[in-house]
Length: 314
Ligand SMILES: NC(=O)c1ccc[n+]([C@@H]2O[C@H](COP(=O)([O-])OP(=O)(O)OC[C@H]3O[C@@H](n4cnc5c(N)ncnc54)[C@H](OP(=O)(O)O)[C@@H]3O)[C@@H](O)[C@H]2O)c1
Image (cartoon, rainbow, N blue to C red; front, side):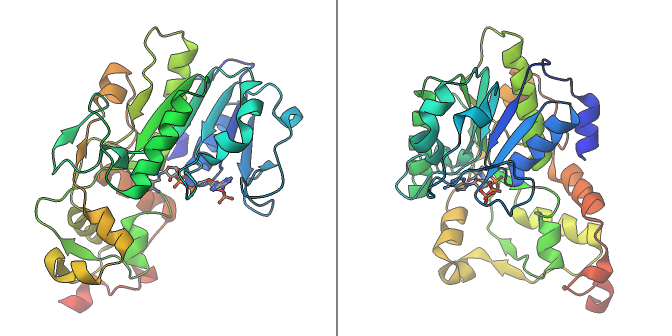
């Protein structure tokens, strides 16, 4: 949980001030860590009714961020995804404002989808991006725009994000988890607290004037694994029934185009740069540790489940 991250983190310099463009799931987690570490934070959202909003920013709206409200911002995280045309919403609307800030670190949350399909093989930051899906091509365009925008940028490539309120445990609880079997298929993932922890670690790394600040860093856990393995583990944690086994070949035609594209790529993404070269220690190194944390934080118990408890299934 976040308290564990706080315990092992060091404060940033006293003059540091963080701006999170897009205080959604990951953005809010970093903002919570920063606040707990005593760093002032400003979080944008698209509605002033949203939780933990400090400033309104919607690239499709009329309101623009007032540069005066951003005075003294030294660190920036952008979590906003590309627009439908592949333009970056933050850069399109805010670049002159961002350039006027005394930024010492800028993080951009991208995806490991830019690597494309590797047929289950390992891939690292040294490999060329080979995106095949339209959304990954758009994402790579945004990465390139951030890399040439002139800010002190690091691109963080993320796999599937999970954490409290957003895990297979919640899927089982709501009766929507599917046990799909596709032999040889794995997915990578990262707990949301490790995104916040990695950002914080990279901010420190940049702050120390480290000679080599890599432009691209994969932020993934140690254990690529099939989703069916996670579901089986989650079922054992919740002591509920397994959903029926569905062979991939028999259901692929009935899947949504989005789900089909999700299952069409297979890769193992290396975290060697983050965890060995840059020295970040994962709080949730694999799904077993991460799901136990989700169980604790979500305070789930079998009586809340829509799927039947294990005992009714024999
Ligand atoms: N979810 C995954 O498994 C996954 C995997 C790999 C990469 N990623 C990428 O990693 C990033 C963070 O993921 P997340 O799950 O934390 O995302 P999230 O919860 O959806 O947060 C995205 C944030 O961007 C803001 N936003 C979206 N469109 C905007 C626009 N046009 N103008 C201004 N703000 C806008 C949202 O505003 P509101 O708060 O008002 O909604 C939200 O705060 C995203 O870029 C996502 O695509 C996600």
